[in-house]
Length: 119
Image: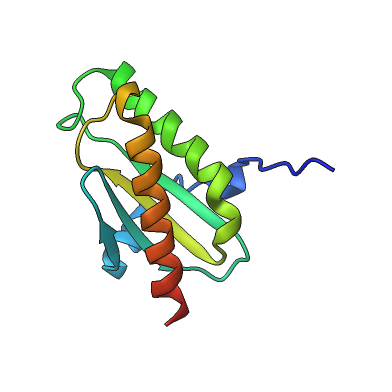
C-alpha cells in the first residue's frame, strides 16, 4: 500500500496573524541556511509557513525554487511531527547544487525540534 503525503490547504499557514503568533512565541532553531520558528497548536496537524525575503534572493524565480524545495522536503518529513505550527525562514540563498545539504540540514532541524517538543 502506498502512503500519500499530501500537502493540503489545511497544512499551510496563510494569514499574517498566524505568522505573527508563531514569531511572537519566540521559539526557534537555526542552522546555516534555515531557521525554524515553531509553536504548539491545538489541532492534530502540522502546519507550515514559508518566508523567503527579497533580501535573501532578489529574483522571484529563486525565491519560488526555495519555497518549492522546502515544501517538498517538509511534505515527506511531516509524519514525524504533530501539533505544531512551523514557519521556516530562509537565511541564506541556496541553489540546486546545495539540495543535499539543505535536505540534511532540514532533517537535523526536524530531529532537534522533535527533541525540543518532547521536553
